[in-house]
Structure formats: C-alpha cells, structure tokens
Image (cartoon, rainbow, N blue to C red; front, side):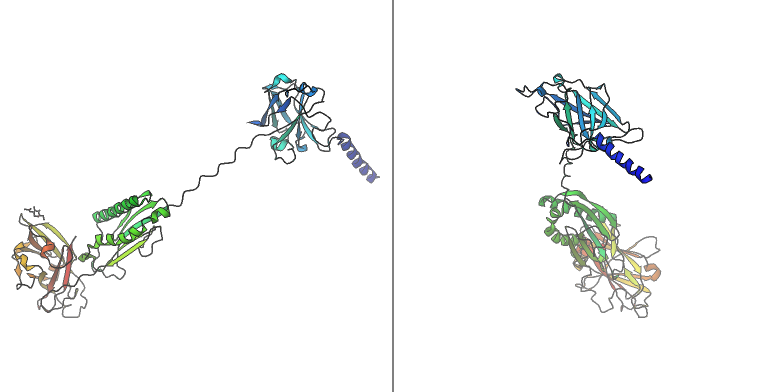
Length: 500
Ligand SMILES: *[C@@H]1O[C@H](CO)[C@@H](O)[C@H](O)[C@H]1NC(C)=O
C-alpha cells in the first residue's frame, strides 16, 4: 500500500513537471515567433555599473526598405535566456529604462513550452517603440532573503552554444508576441594585461680589492693601511674603472664607491648594466691589476710591506681575495714583497735580521730638522725575541752602534745625527762619522741598553737640498738600510726601513 502511494507520488511529480514545460520549442526563446527582420536589437556591449547592475543599450533602427510588420512593431517585452539555478524564491530583481523603474518588476519564469529546466528573465510592459533608439535598459541582480540567487551575468545567462559564460541572449518581443529578434550582449572582458615589459638583464656587481696577504705570518711588523692611503687607493680604483668603462661604453648603473677600509683590505664596488657590458673591460682590467699593484709596491716594495703579498683582485662581492665569487670581470695579481739584496755591510758579521734582540722598525718618519734648512728622517728601534736566544748574538744586551748604507759622495748633505734613547727628554745631535771612501757607510755610536733601545730613535738630519732617496743606498724608494752592532761587532743584524 505504502509502495503504491510512493510510486504514485513520483509519477504525479513527473507528470506535473512535464505538464509545466512542454518542450515544444527546444531552443530559446521557446516559442513560435519571427526573429528577423526587425528594427530592434540590444547593442552587444553591456556596461556594468557595479552592485549587480547591468545596462543594455537599445537600438531601434528600421532596416532600409523593410516593410515587414516586425520592422514596424513596438517593443513590449525583453526575455533573457537564463540558468535554472537563478529561479529562486522571491529573487531580488529590479529594472529601469533610462533610469525609470519599469512598471512591472522583472521576473524569472520557467519557459512553458521550453524543455525541462529552460528559464527566462522577463522584463515586460516596457512600452517601448521605434522612438526609443538609444534607451538604456538596466537590470539589477541581487540575492533573495535567504542569500540565494544570481548576481552576475556569468551566473545568470545561458551563453549561446560555443560562447563563454557572461554572454546573454535576449529576445525582444512586440505586443503580439509575433516578433522576437535575438540579441547577444555581454560585458566586454578587460583587455588582457599587457605582457610585462621585458625584464632588464641581470646587473653585474663588480668589486675591486687591494689586500695585504700574509698567511704565513712573514711580516715581522704588522702594517695597516692608513685612512689616507685607503682613500687614495680606493679613489684610484674608482677613477680608473669609471674612466675605462666610459671609454668602452660599459654602462655603470651603480657608481663604483669605496665600501670597505680595513687594516689590510681596501674594497670598492659598483654595478654594470649587464654582464655583457661589464665584460667589455675584461682585457683592460686583466692588465690593470698589475698597474694597481705597482701603485702599492712602488715597483720595489717598501720595507714595511716585507713579508706581505700585495694582492689586487677583481671579482664579485666577497671578503677573501683568494676566493672571490665570479663576476663579469675577474682579475688577480699578487706580488710577494721581499727586501732586495744589498752589498752591505762591508765587514764580516751576522747580518741576519733578529739575530739579536734589537731591530729597526720598517716604518720611518720625517719631520722638520733642528736647523731651518734641514729635515730629519727618523728610525725607531724595537726590542724583539731573537731568532736564536741561546746564541752569542741572541744574548746581546747592548746596541753599540748603528751603521747606515749611505752614499758617501753626499757626505756634505748630512748635518748631524740625532739620537734619543727611550726615556730621554730630547735629541742629542752629533756630528756624522763616515767609513772609508767607497764603503758607503755612515756611523753613529749608541751604547744603548735594552730599555733605551725599546722605542729609541735615530734621525738623519739632511739638508733640504737632498732627499732621503738620494742619500740612502738601495733601489726601493725612500728606503734606508742599517745595521745594529753589538759590542763585539760580530752581530750586525741588517734592517731596512721606509718613509710612510
Ligand atoms: C726644509 O724642510 C722642512 C720640512 O722637511 C721645512 O719645514 C723647512 O721649512 C725647510 N727649510 C727650507 C729653508 O726650505
């Protein structure tokens, strides 16, 4: 019994549905009417004014020579082919013509003679005619009280076969429902975003370095670049690279600038427009690193760089000049600084540096001399751990004398020698004393204890008519050689010192 009721109920539903929608006309507008000719159409472009409002523009133009009744008909009703899903209870719908609400609110209906599910949105009693060319017909879509409904044309309209969502088909009916020209309209999709502009080539960051490298701790006295030296060397790197890039047409996008001044590392960096442009000066920079090294070493390294390797390197952004990241420009030049060999002293004694506890610092200084036409060039002594403390030289406790490798044809260019043991209030200026002609040996007696030697100073007072470079022997610029003798004259470690 129950079963029978259920079956009957299903049958009744099925019959009811088919009774409502006959399927007589399988396609929109689901009725028998004349689609063409006609004076009416909706222009294909819909404007969306936001908040679910879409406006269609009516075109009312009688085709030339048309005498068909549909060319003279009025326009009473517009139907849109819409999705079944939009047929919700009491949908929020509104329509206006040229801003005035339509007499009858739009409605969503099942199409009586359409197939099952066919649905239309109907705007009727519009009262339009051939005089309404250009009329704005707007519909506003919204959700019902339960939050259901269709709010966009994409949701609302059944697009014509092969068309994307959002394209609506409308039929424009006259009062007799005899004429039903079809129109298609949609909101034009925004133009596809223009392809992003071609991304610029990757920049090429280049850094140039000048470093003093001493991995084996060969430099007995550590040297640090002064701020002035760093500024001056960095500026040379910057100026040279910038000028060469300009000549080669290599565009620098980030100007080269000093980025680091450490005690033994100078670094400048900049950016080229591209790897290709940076590479335009590769050949030049491969040669230029030698030029920059010579700028630091002066050809023959100064005494204070002895034991260091001067390294000029070009590459990416790094900190160790021996393993820089690769860049579009890469170069490397290392110069090991060792003192030259000199034929001095002219006597037999142990000349090895650090044979005794007494040494001469490799940096010397200059100051105005005690007379108005002289300049003093000053050496400073240091007390060090001797290389072999148990040896006779290693046990030395007195610096008896210093002897300089000097040009003895310039005997008249030196006025005096200033000596100032550590702790003394001032210099004592003594007459210079020379060895035999041709020995190139200038002598000064010291007789200093260890305490007096640690920081003790010796100055050569030269007339301004000569220079230290002329006066002292040896190839390196502004560099002098001197021995420090013990009392036995068996120990005479030889040192070299350069003006900084
Ligand atoms: C000699 O040189 C020193 C600087 O080293 C300077 O102070 C002095 O004025 C110079 N004397 C003359 C007469 O030019």
